[in-house]
Image (cartoon, rainbow, N blue to C red; front, side):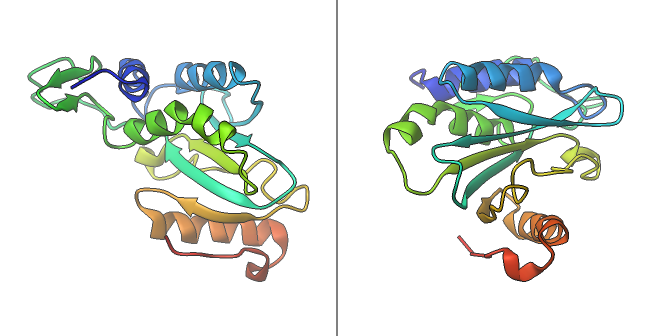
Length: 191
């Protein structure tokens, strides 16, 4: 496998132990650093103990509904699992990359982050939002508790893309609906 920006970022993300019982702030700091390299600001919402955070960032214009690329930052514990390698050290074997979270969902987050330049250079009319949450693996306790800016400035989210998109659509629609005053304010599309 030829190293790419996605592979490099994914290798970095896997090395960050964001097991659901741990803080995810080291990963959030990493993401914020990559965003800052592109002059992109992000907003955080924290759990009650300020040990975990959700991140919301907008690429492109901020005055229009957009597409949300949403993923969770936590991984399930490896306790009692028989790993042949260190689960928190990415290992490439042939054309596959192994490591805790490589598919669920650090791989997706790495793809998003590796494409920041491409998204910005496209000068899209529709903004792209990154929404990265905590504790999905622990019962969605932190699942985008608040979507900063999602509707607080008269915006609505046009689409949520996630691996388990139907559940995400239902949850986000419900949260936005509560904030916006009705489901009619949330345009729902299927990918």
